[in-house]
Image 1 (cartoon, rainbow, N blue to C red):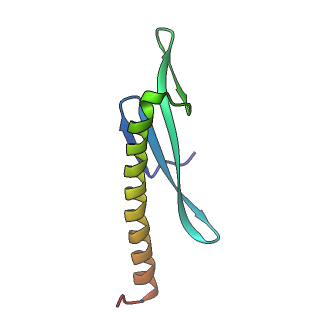
Image 2 (cartoon, helix red, strand yellow; image 1 turned 135 degrees about the vertical axis):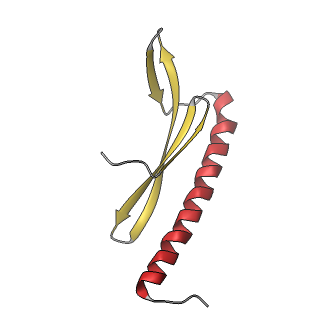
Amino acid sequence: MSTPAHKLRDGCLQAVIWRNHGERGTYYTVNVARSYRQGDETWKETDSLNADDLLAMAELLREAYAWIKTQKRADAKGLRERDGVTAK
């Protein structure tokens, strides 16, 4: 299994960013989850959110968007440098 490119957490909420490679180049996907305890010991994850989770998850997704945007710029810059193209 591959390693996530980046993880963001806020309490029991997380957004995991994955870097993928396809025919059209690099792209990013995000998986969201909320951790909860089942019984006394077992931790589980779900993609179902409570109403109280929504604002915090929206903020994690905003942070994920900003991180991905920065990475895409770095990816594009790396490709330009690799191909010997100078920015104007």
